[in-house]
Length: 230
Image (cartoon, rainbow, N blue to C red):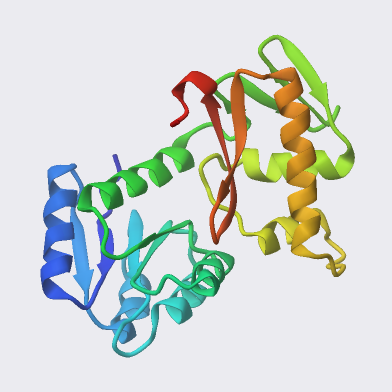
C-alpha cells in the first residue's frame, strides 16, 4: 500500500475529519485542505496517493483544480459533489477525474472507491481475469476462445478494457477512437457499444463486460452473470 497520503480537499471540517478517520482505519494516512487556493501549491511540493476533491470550494473551485492538476500529475482524483446535474458529472470526468460520488455519501464507499482505483493502477493492464487483448490481430482471447473485431470496435473495447473500472465519458471515447477529431454524435458511441455488447454476449453469454453509468458514460468490468445484481 502506498505510503503517500490521501489528499482530502473538503471545506466542511467535520466531513473532512470523518474521511480522515475512515481512511486511517483502512491503513491510509491523510492530509486535509479546506481552501481551493492551497491545493496546487501543496501538490507541487508533495505527492498524494489519491485526491478526494470537492467541487464547491472557497477560492479555486474543484473543476478548475481538476483541470490544473492534470497538467502536471496523474494522481487519481475522485470528485465529490452535492451537484447532481448530468453536465457536472460529465464535465468532471472529461477534465480528468477518475471517478465521482454524490453527496451525501457513505464513508465506506469513498474508501472502497479509492481502493478500487489504486488496485486498478497497480494491476497488469493487458490481462484482466484471463481476458487478454491482442492488438496485432484486433481480437481478444478469453475462455479458450478468440474473438475478432473491426478496427473501430477494437479501439473502443481496448480503450475501456485497458483501464477496467474507470468511467469514460462519451466524449473521451470519441477522442480515443477518432484521432482526427471528426464531429460525431453521442449516439455513435452508443451504437458501437450496443454492437460490442451483442458480439460479446453471443460468444460469452455467461459474462458481462460493458456497463453504462447513468449520466457519466461507460466502464469495462468483467462480471459473471450469476454475480450480477438482479
